[in-house]
Length: 504
Image 1 (spheres, rainbow, N blue to C red):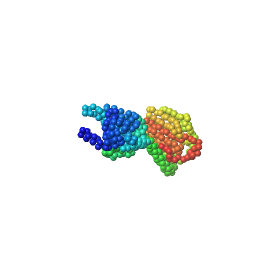
Image 2 (image 1 turned 180 degrees about the vertical axis):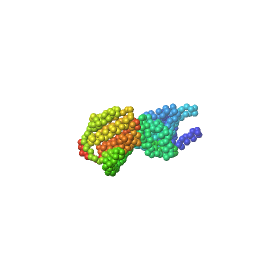
Image 3 (image 1 turned 90 degrees about the vertical axis):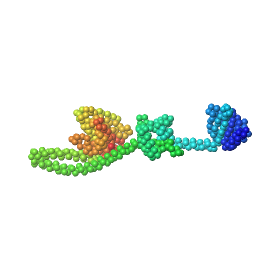
Image 4 (image 1 turned 120 degrees about the vertical axis):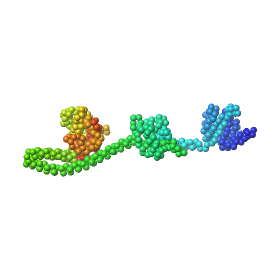
């Protein structure tokens, strides 16, 4: 009896913890003071009452929750439940209950022991936490940048929608995979990034490539380590930006800048050459005069030497003439012209030379290309130069094919004339210099390196472009692009002098 009294005294001393004993049907056997304080019933009022009817919410009573709990307690020995409880006044509140099986001295189960504590604002805090979690997830899911988190070993723990779209997989196919799976350089890249993170804590604007199937995607990432409340590293977070479009734009900008530099350089060279040509012409004319007089006065032996000197003068005169052509700011007669007609006119002149050198001609002319606004004679001069260069480049080759084509550009704003060969080709260093005056890959007796420079200025005057692609021992392909003719734009082109822009 003394032990029973002591036990009841201990149970009643737990004034903030409800301790209730029931049989398996829920009939209350013991109801301590803590239970009385929590539920509002005195121990006398509660005794022999049905616990669910007395303290469970209406919804839980209707679902027979107590019966399910009893079944789980019988099978598992104990359960912990988060429940909505109800007191005598009808107030509903959240509580956490630990429910165990009560056994007698022989070990037989004879009832249920429930220990319950009121947790003020538990559901409110959970709702706030859930709301905050949803808010943060909505921010991450709405980000246009890919966001991914990993555990300390590099396994993915979270990936937002942008990352899934970047990789092209669903969430369940990504979570748990090692992040290096998507790195072009694999685990070595992952280790490199983690070493930087451990050294600096975070990294910004770090660029590398990821691999998705057969695609290589350039990425700019900013990463940081994730810590728990004890300062221990629990993972990392990376924000990925696909910079494919940015890289293409940068490359295009670099190409445009190179074109501008080339155009400015050519204009400056043109002005310089004009002055040089005039300076050479004056003493050259005087030299010719004196040589003519000497030729009359001296004998045959010296006369032969004078003839050689005159031939040297003719070569110098020819160079000066080419220089003048290169630098000349002449007016062009722009009319609506057919690119195919220009090609056929040039081939009519060069076809026999091609046959003599066993060069196979392959024509791919698009009969539907629109007209361009240009000076037909000048465009033919450009084509003659390109075909002549192609012919010389294939000298000594066993397989000689000259391909001339016309087509409309993909955007439909320019007509393209292509001239390609199967000749010796060029190195990247040579390609960078081919439009420079006096640069040539030919022997000195086959050209002085002004043909492409003059062609460059002609196409510049037409607001066009000359592109070249070449590979050593695999041939060269030139593409001349000319704007499509528009009737209302003809006056704007007429008598336009060449300027240094929009060429490559």
